[in-house]
Image (cartoon, rainbow, N blue to C red; front, side, top):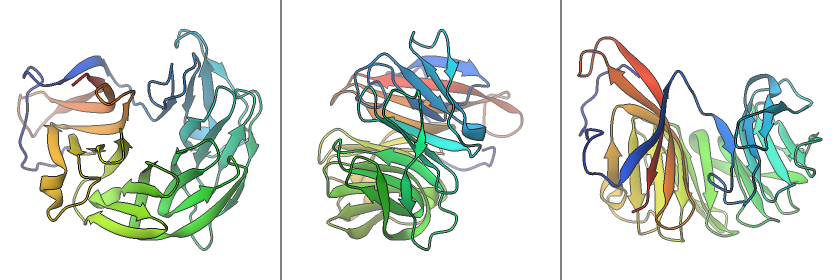
Length: 287
């Protein structure tokens, strides 16, 4: 994170449409679901958090109190996603993909076929419908067509770890990952939209079939209005924010209201280089 690199730099006091709504030292947000659909679109009061050693926590009072749930695994969990108030999924290392149908009271391992992919580490889950869902992981993606009971290997994508997945319908989706790799999937055909680079695309979200956002480990928020298609990707994906930091996740509740979570680097000397600390940050836009 402290490696020097040249970039445009926007100050946090500029008149930008993105504003900080939360900031705290030494907080890292990894896998979060809720509340009221803030990060997933499902309207409910419960909040779920996943993490190391199979950790699953649930809060029903806006995060004031947390109850640990029995996941049945000691593997690290990277992501959590709910398709309804009761039905949800938590996934992580070595093919771990858990399903609950009672709001997390019980979690059971789903049937997962990763083909020849090893390790079968799962980083993200997205359901364009309650029946059809996708999971992203190392060099590949998985699909379920029966509400998450069985997950099947689809195909290898470009050779990098896939950190995020988003489908705008049952057949059209995007895989974002390490080394700025971004792939588009249409009817099981994969097209690489953004080639190798230095940073990682940590998350991706579309508000409609053409308008999408990606966030990077180098503190970038980029936007496309052409479904990511175009001759020069750096022009097609317009830079909205470029700061010293690491954005981990992005979600929009409607076409204008969005949230980004991650960390911001604060340089003690006021410029890049030397001592620094990081602050956990959530940003919001209504424009």
